[in-house]
Structures are given as C-alpha cells and as structure tokens.
Amino acid sequence: MIFSTLEHILTHISFSVVSIVITIHLITLLVGEIVGLYDSPEKGMIATFFCITGLLVTRWIYLGHFPLSDLYESLIFLSWSFSIIHIVPYFKKHKNNLSAITAPSAIFTQGFATSGLLTEMSQSEI
Image (tube, rainbow, N blue to C red; front, top):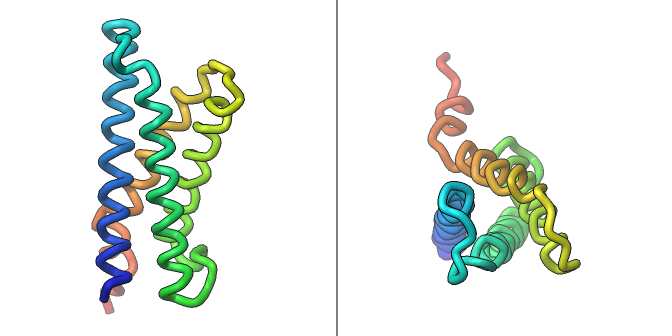
C-alpha cells in the first residue's frame, strides 16, 4: 500500500514539475530571458529525474523485476531517458537547443503513461 501511494505521489510531482518547465520554456520563448528564471528549467528537470528515478526504483522493489514489462513502465522509462538527455548538457555547461525537444517529449510520454487511456486499453471487451 505504501509503495503504491509513493508511486502515485512521485508520478504526480514529476508530471507537475515537467509541466512547469514547459511553461517556463514558453515564457522565455515569448518574452525573452528572465533573470530570475535562468536555471529554473534545468533544475526542474533534475527534480523530475529524481522523482522518476524514485518511481522506477519503487516499482522495481515492489514488483521484483526491472520496470519495463508493460507499456506504462516503458513510457515512464522513456520519460526518464528524456530527462537524462535534457540534463547532461546542463552539467557539461553547454547551451544547446536539444532541451526544446526533450522537455516536451518527457511531458508527452509521461502524460500519456499517466492518463487513463492505458487502463482502458488493457481491459478486454469480451
């Protein structure tokens, strides 16, 4: 019970943080560079990375196998991979435009994984 609650909390925190990161990217695209929000998207993706890592580790401990066995786990792992790709240039102090692709990809894959559509797809009609 505690593992499912922790998984639920980590999923919603990471999705919320990625949504805020996308909003900050759009604000800086439309308005320009805001001094107070300079490192916020990268710090948000680092927080998302740690939330998704905690989610995957929790599922690994709870289920007893590496979490890649179904579509939900695979999409969460893909979102985790996008967050890694997003934060590697930040630690190397390189400014590139790859973050414009990886942050929305992370939110779309995680959004689809956490939507109710996967639950409806897995139920049979027979």
